[in-house]
Structure formats: structure tokens, C-alpha cells
View (cartoon, rainbow, N blue to C red):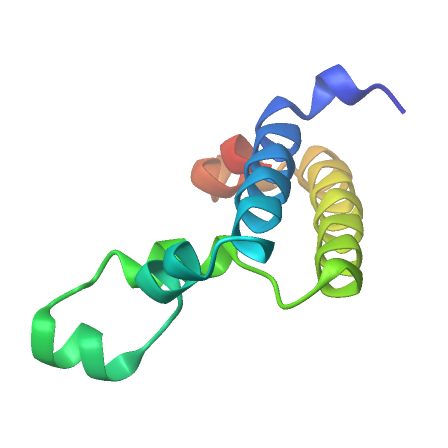
Length: 96
């Protein structure tokens, strides 16, 4: 498996790991970025929809999710090549 075939996936994994590792030791960052529906609704903090996806509860959660993301993206790429899914959904093919 050539990691250079999945640059966006590797970048997403790196961003998740860095953001989560910083969040593990920085409660203020977690408070500003965690999904909190009250703040989304009342204070229009819609960025929380994105930033909360980069936070993980602990190391095991982070490792499992990144492992799954990597192999899901690799599998999706293989399926899209075989079935020519890229013609139907170019956005998903580009992301993974």
C-alpha cells in the first residue's frame, strides 16, 4: 500500500491527531470546540459542527477512529476505481 496514493486521507488523519493531542491537555480548547448544541443554537457557533469532529475522548478513541478512517478511505478508493464511482460522485472520490 502506497501512502502517497491517499494524500487527503493522511492530511485528515494528521490534523485529527494533532488537534486531539492538543485538546487532551488544553481544556480551554476543548470548551471552545466541542459540540454543544446550546451554543450552536443560541450563539450561532456553527464552526462547532466541524471542530468537534476533530476532537476525541481519549487515546484509544483516537487510534480506533484514525485506523478506521485510513482503511475506510482505502477501501472506498478501491471500490470507486472498480465501479467507476468517480463518474457518479467525484466529490467522494476526491476526498478519499
